[in-house]
Image (cartoon, rainbow, N blue to C red; front, side):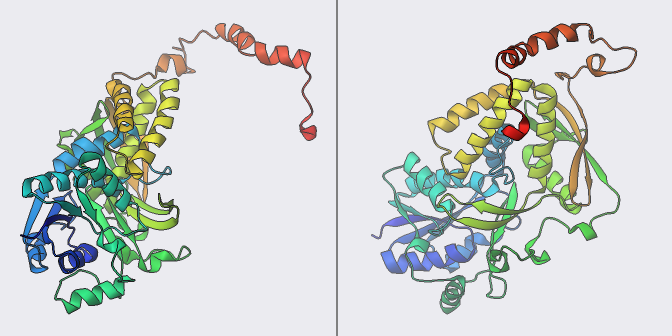
Length: 404
């Protein structure tokens, strides 16, 4: 009896070709696993497609709610943005896919798992390291790191030769990955760092010139750092993200053109569409600015960067991630309230925020008649605050600026 391998199957070019290639090279029976993370059309007909490509069985797992609840919202609470811009949509999906691969392999009695990641990308690291952490006994097969198909045109020819249906042509050689939290596109003309991305690479966002002339407003309610309602209507996480994706995308919000530092040491030009991630992240930061102290905000910004790097680098299943998550959870105890955001011609702007746990006091900040701030206390405060600087300046006169 042939050994079994569970392949993470997207239905795209690489994994479709991999089904036939793995069987030819290793003689293994290929079982496919497709995780429905909420991307548009990701699972439509994917089971039948896998079977036509040579899989002995095909599984589809609807994990949209699990993805949002256990991966997306924790990252949102953390404020995790890789290099300050990328909301980590693809990176967040990989540990969940790794978990599903391991669970399916155990259920099916497989000795190996497989994926379609290339040797130049980040996803191979995220999947391999996650699988090693969860099931070090399982072998990992990565055809794209082994086969001699040198470019996508060769893969397309291989697919046509073997009657494997793939949604890619040489004329449109983009590699696309998408889930509920975002969409990533690379390849083709995008590999020219000077070339402006053509409109055909975008699917979720309108161009600024085609966006509505009048702005739209959304009000997002949060409870402990998690969005729970939109415009006064309570929604589950999946539905809320879909609604924000739609309205923000209509107004051209959420396009990201990023020159990114990959984990393997190369720079890569990445195009992202993340309307909901952009708006919800902005609203969450605004609410934190209202409800967290200065020191909390300062330290949490450092944690956010560490959290983002950890996710990007494939270290979700580590004690470090659990430790950071515990700190983040503590910071979100009072991050509850509502934020109003204006969407207009590719921009999202926070225009209002309120919370019962707000640290903002109008009577302290106002310059009106109801000012409750003790102005007379300022002189003593300044005297003590400047004591160190004043003492040093008296004993050690500062050099003139031009001498520095």
